[in-house]
Amino acid sequence: MLIQNTSSSLADTLRHRRQKLASLINFPAILWSGSSNPRNFPANRFPFRASSNFLYFAGLPLQNAVMRLEGGKLELFIDDPQPGSALWHGEMPTREEIAQKMGADGARPMAELELWVENAATIAVQDAATWTQQSQLLNRWVLPQNPPQGIDLELTKAIASLRLVHDEEALIELRKAAAVSVEAHIAGMAATPNARREAEVRAAMEGVIIAHNMTTAYNSIVTVHGEVLHNEQYHHYLQPGDLLLADVGAETGMGWAADITRTWPVSGKFSSTQRDIYNVVLAAHDACIAKIYPGVEYREIHLLAANVIAEGLVDLGILQGNPQDLVEIDAHALFFPHGIGHLLGLDVHDMEDLGDLAGYEEGRKRSDRFGLGYLRLNRPLRPGMLVTIEPGFYQVPAILNDPQLRSKYQNVVNWERLSEFSDVRGIRIEDDVLVTETGSEVLTAALPNHANTIEDLVGC
Image (spheres, rainbow, N blue to C red):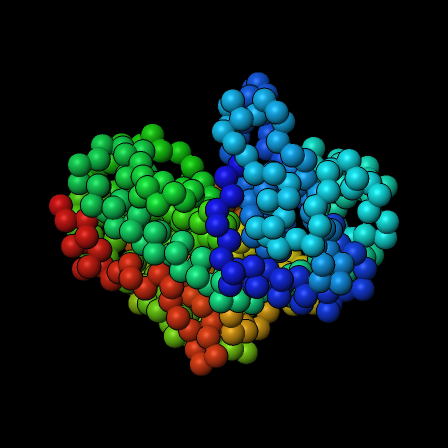
C-alpha cells in the first residue's frame, strides 16, 4: 500500500467535507473501505478499489480500513502491516503515518472497532466479507441489495447530497481523468488502421491510461458490435465497412472517473448511411449540451434528445409521423432505448450503489415507459454537478425482432427503408459535462466529435 503525498489543500478539503457531513447528521457514522478478494488462491488477488463513500472523506485508497466520523472528527481503524509483509510488498506506512496523511484525529487497531459502533450509521460496501463484518458488528443486516433504513438511510441521504456537487479538489481530479481519457481515444483512433482485432485498439487506449498511472474507470467497451450496449468482448476482427464504438474512461489514483464514447469507421471513412445516422446522434448530443443550465430538469434533457433523434429518423424516412407524437409513444426507444446519461464522479455511474436515491429527486420513481425506464438521473441540475450526455442509435435484434414491439410500431417504422442502414449497428457519442453557474463546461471538449474530424483522426 503506497500512500501518495497529500497536499495541504486536499487535507483541508477532506476536513471540510467531514464538517459538512457533521452539519447534516447528529449521530456517528462508520464507513468501511472494503477488502480485496482472492483470485483462485489467497496470494493472487483481484485489483482493489476502495469504497467511494470511504474515499470521499479519507482521500486515500486504503484496504481493510474503517473510519468513524462524529462531529467533524475522524477516528481511523486499521492494523499495522504484518512483520513479514515487507518481504513481498516493501516497507509499508504505519497506522499513525496513515492517520497523519489523511488528517485523522486518532488511529486505532481494528480490534478496537467493536467498542466504537454503538448508535452508528453506515452504508453497505459491495464485497461480501466487508458487509458481513458490518452486519456482525452493528448487529443488523447491512446488505448492498437492501434499501437502507433508519439512521442508515439518513446517512445515505446526507452523503448523497454532498457528493452530488463537486468541490474544487474533486474537479481537479475529474479534469485529470478527462484529459487522459481524451488522449486514450485519440490513440485508439490512430491505432485502428493497423489493427486486426478490437483487442488491439483496446490495448492502445488502455496503454495510455496505464502510462499515466491510472486505471480504467469501468470495463472498456471497444467493439464493432455497438448494438450490444455494454459489450466487453474484444475478439472480433475489424472489417472494412465496420463502425468501431469505443466507450473508455480513465480513473485517477484517488478514484475519480471519466467516461467518453466515440464511434469511428474502421476504414477511415463513414459510408453515406453511417454519416447520416452519425449526424442525427451528434445533433441530439449538441442540442442537449446547449440546454444544460442550473435548474433545468435532466429528464427534459433526455426528452430533448429523444425528440431530436425522432425528428432525424423521420427526415431519413426510417420513422413515420410527427416527431413529438412518436416520442409520446416511445417509438424513438426502438433505436435509443437507454437514458441520455448519468452522474459522474467517484464512480462512472456515480452513487448507483445507492440505487435511485442519489439519481432521483426525493418523491420521484422510475417510469415504466419503454422510453424512460432506463433514465438514471431525474432531478434538476445544479452548479457543480457533472453528468454525461450520451445519445445513441442502435439496431438491437432483441428489440427490433420482438413480436410485441414489432406489432405495436408496425405503422411508424419503414422497415424497408431501415434495411438500407444495415451497416449501422450502433453509434454513441458521449461527453462529460459540468454544470456551471451560467451554463455548462464540457470537460472532454478536447476530443473532436464531428464526422470529418473523426475521419482525419483515424487517418487511413
